[in-house]
Image 1 (cartoon, rainbow, N blue to C red):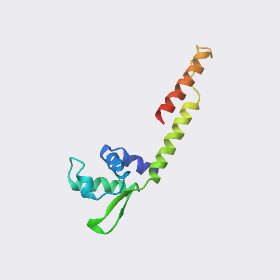
Image 2: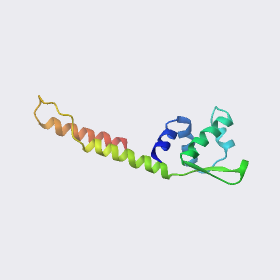
Image 3: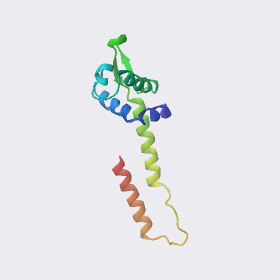
Length: 119
């Protein structure tokens, strides 16, 4: 489920749709009114989001509304946090000509600080 979700959120329009749906359900028409693209284009973006299980529909046919499904986003968050933590706590590149001194500690501290800024 991670790969389809990452591919789906790679597009800025789809991310904006998800941000809107985080505030509550919306119809295709309501979503289309927010973007300078056609209603069929919005429907295509919604199809990609639905295939990635990021959204689901409720209600019949043309009256159906789209709702956010947060599970894939939580999976992305978990994966990204794991990668960031590994990077922050992992071994630092070693320069064979330099001795281990306070610069290594400073570099590790800088990495940890940057990781916290990302979260």
